[in-house]
Amino acid sequence: MPLVHVLLLAETLPDAERLASAWHAAAPHAGTEARAVRVPAAAAVSAAGPGAAPGGGPGGGHDDGAGRGVLLAGPAIPVGRPAAVGPQDVGPAHPGPTPPGPASSALPRAEQAALTDAAARADVVVAYVTLLDGEGLHRGVVVEAAAAAAPHAVPVVVLTGRSQASRREWSTAGLSGVHEVADDDVARVARTWSPGWAR
Image 1 (cartoon, rainbow, N blue to C red):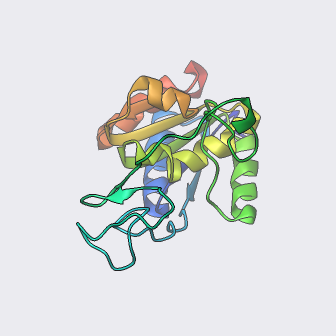
Image 2 (cartoon, rainbow, N blue to C red; image 1 turned 180 degrees about the vertical axis):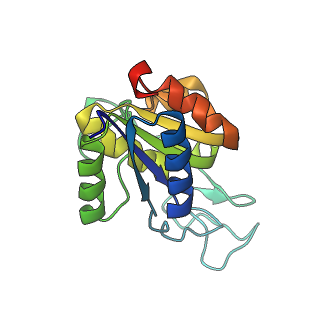
Image 3 (cartoon, one colour; image 1 turned 135 degrees about the horizontal axis):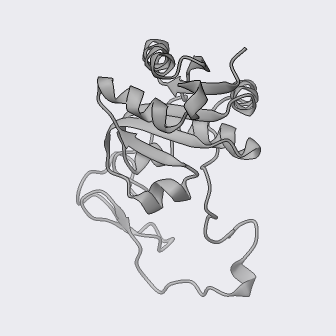
């Protein structure tokens, strides 16, 4: 039985299995488990943005009396006097800044629990995305990997074709490492994250 267990996650099972195969080839004494993680589609958001009038396009915005914003080429821009901010504004309705760590899971509860259980058995969780950007740090495979691993303090490593996230951004999101890789670079990352005796 392998003494190092690696959980490899991707949006599709073939991608996860390909990574698991490359990882196992570089570290044959490590056990690998491949899983697909499909995050449900986000609720549709109006392209006009918040504060837009129904059916309105650019120039179609208006102040509806709430004093919340004016539509100018899409986004709502706040207008009017800002509301006061003080101790009375802190609480469940105004929780304040988000603490560092992974974003919340968007998976159904049963899938989230199964992924968390799988992460608990792993020594490292590896997530693959073609591009790691700001959106990828807030929704998708990387977020689900970090959310599942965090309760068990299991390190999360991201393999990506291209990263647009800074080290501060990805470490704040609960990641231990980000590696830009081509197909033959997976072995290098596997050797980096495996003890010498597992190679």
